Image 1 (tube, rainbow, N blue to C red):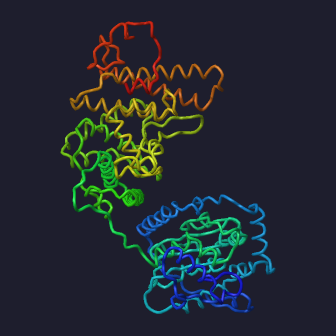
Image 2 (cartoon, one colour; image 1 turned 30 degrees about the vertical axis):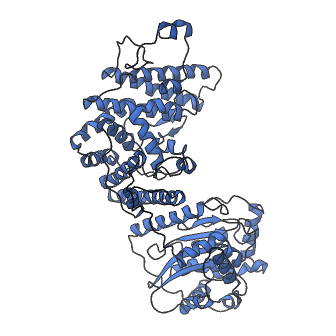
Image 3 (cartoon, one colour; image 1 turned 120 degrees about the horizontal axis):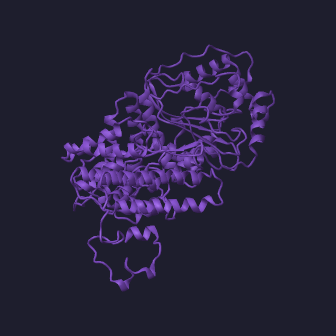
Length: 620
């Protein structure tokens, strides 16, 4: 759909597209396979008009179609995120012309009768329903008979017409890719007098919508479309502030999106037929996380919430599969059969790789972590109830109630107000705001991106910041070997004083030890001393800051809340006899280690009395 002006009779836009396709090693698109209706004369002739064509039908309940649309849109976001010549999504980051100047110039040109950039053509089209009807009917008359898949591209004014066309496109057509480039449809002047442009989107027959702009393009006003059209995904490219269709379509990101549809990849899933590779522990832990998330989806009672959760989980799993496949292709490593099955789109069976104590720790973490980050979905008790399904699969079905109740009791003791949503730990108030306990998986995932993952032997560890898998696996490992110990170093911002996240890690570890006691498993008897040490550190930090800080300093408020949590955990540990109150040994040395000799600076030697760094202490 051509833009403002004479309709591009020389099809310069196609030359630009084919240059872009050639750069991707693809064959050019012949003019015979292109439909490019020319409607410029309609916009310059007075008195033309027709009744608007009938709108197409869209199912009343299009939830499933919307969810699948979001998954496809996420795939585009992932593919473009790897390109350095594309700006961040939803962020128009660099204007060569100040925004107010762009917007004012665009609005004046659209609303006036001047010929500046022929933007008055846009105003005429939008302001006259009979003219819109005539243009749309003319375009529809050019369409071929029979069912067809389409790549629909709208440039400038053509993007405005293409958006309207979606409402009236016959059901026999499927739009495999919808691209708007250099679009003025985000201009407020086009929407000033109500909904003159349709915002109803046919999710069931359009696969995706990407809007591409240069932030210095005066026709766009430096604005994307996502704030007005919820289905649009904005992408910012650099064509030096120009507006030509050939420049937009010749850009590598735009021509690449078109090439994906015209020349779909036949890439095979990598497998190994000569040897069987055993899954790493990280691989197994991440599969446990995936199974747990699917169990949560199945345990949600509310049908609508369950559909949203499954849709979010599908996107998260797509992210994992894409990152894993890329990692395998780039490294050329042989992969376990379970990972090959995951890459082929199937969820492998849950491995049985954990002892009961380790499994308890991991389930505690998973039940308290948002597994579909960045989406926030209150699943009720589904996060807790999902434990039963996992334990059933691993042969521990009779232990689900004990583990869930243990975490309930600890959470209830620490959060006296109750009502703490599953998928979080304990909310901590900071000033007038509420900081929900950030899911532990996410706190860790930011520390190990793809670069760090490439150095590991794990396949599924190749997962960048922003997803659930790497972080949950990291914290799952920590929980099984002492969450509180590692939490100090990871969540305290580099210091030894726990933050809100560190306090929540302590909550988890206390819950793990309490559950282990209920199940007659070995209990870490040094936990009480370590929690007491945390309480002392927080108290000392509060005293240090109180002298000069504002009384309502956000960090002071947080530290006091952390102190209250840690103190309540000490009460809980004492009340439930999770202590080693009488011991001839100092808690800084394990029971299995011999007492140090007096001349080596042991607990009886006061000549070397000092406060040890918490991270060094916990790793000793």
